[in-house]
Amino acid sequence: MDLKAGLWQKQTLKLAMTQELSQAIALLQYSAQELAAFLEDKMLENPLLQVDYQNVKTVDPRLGLERKTSAAGSGGRDQKNWIEQIGETSDTLQDHLIFQLNLLTVTPEERKIIKAFIESIDENGYLGVDGTEICHRFGISEEEAEHCLSILQGMEPVGIGARGLQECLLLQLERLPCCPENELARIIIKEHFLLFAEKKWKTLAKLMKTDLKQIQKVFDYVQRLNPRPGAAFGGGKAAYVVPDVVVRFEDGSLTVGLFNGTMPKLTFNKDYFESMAAHGDQEVSKFLQTKQHDYQWILKSLEQRNETLMRVSLKIVEKQHDFFFKGPTCLQPMTMKEVADELEIHESTVSRAVREKYMQTPAGTFELKYFFSSSIQTTEQENTSSRQAKAGIGRLIKEEDKKSPLSDQEIVRLLKDQDGIVLSRRTVAKYREQLGIASSSKRKRFE
Image 1 (cartoon, helix red, strand yellow):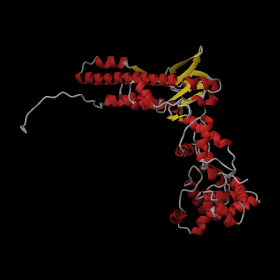
Image 2 (tube, helix red, strand yellow):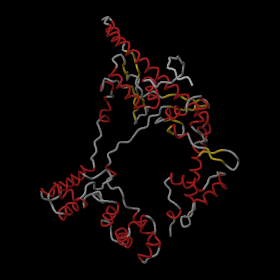
Image 3 (spheres, one colour):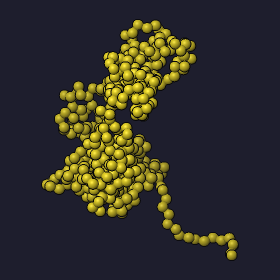
Image 4 (cartoon, helix red, strand yellow):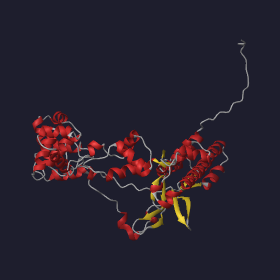
């Protein structure tokens, strides 16, 4: 074997992940909001890059009209609708509780302790602090802390300040009118909460020396209670979905287009470039050249992003033709790999292209990922989508006799006989859990 040292030349092909390539990949997976934020950041870094909002449109929700806005601020607003422009204010859960506290006759020390409890309450209305911590912080006894907590738990909404679901339900039961179901519910939740929650009702009925119908009545009664009393004060604002792709019916055929009404326009700051280039300084020229290259690369990446999104959207419309003409029940099985192979691009490119992007169709607005589903064999040797299988499972369970609910194996048989869909019992169980449907034993009613 020759082990002599030496120098050799060798040519190889290698894909390097440059900063520009990484940026192009990132732009493809950005949602419209993320892309707008990215361009804003780039405008701060690059003086040659300008973000123009003249083409951005807002929608008047009352008139259904699109109105152009300007980046100048209030100059582009409709002065007649000034009331609509006032920011919405809403009380938080803590504000609501503090307001009630101010109406109560309590000592200054009690007020401080109750405020500390209020500040620890989470968005669902549950207490987020241990009583012993309050005792150490204010140097009080457990009895004094419990007294202050009981004052808080007497406020609205009912069930507020509980340390867990069990206490939350008990607080609400105590405020409801007395009746046989209420009395039995208090005993069950206080002494046998886990058996009741896990629907081990036969064991519970023996312990309580009652029948299953009474347990069922208690369950229906408890269903009226609110397990998240603070959720109504969540303060979350409604999220509005803006479509990236719009599909319309025109002259009996489908047209597909990108919706750019929310995207600002990218322009080159020519005046700044010419004024700086006139100095003739070598360092300035090098700076301008770098920033100009950066601008051109972003522009190219945006064009490539739009082209890829358009190609993927056209392929979706082509392969899901029945969906657009007949509705969601006719959604066909389609995978990202299948679309990638037909477009001759990588599967990860399709995944990035559909991430957090939406398509507006005559049947409603859907996330692009909605159109992708796995393939399931049918008795006619054809394929159907997993979404259709889930719809079939949901329909069968909705129509079942609740006193004798369908087992997963019975659902397998009915899907095959009625819909021609072939599934295993384990697959039915998986789809049922994804739909948030309990097992047959927990769906059973006794009256």
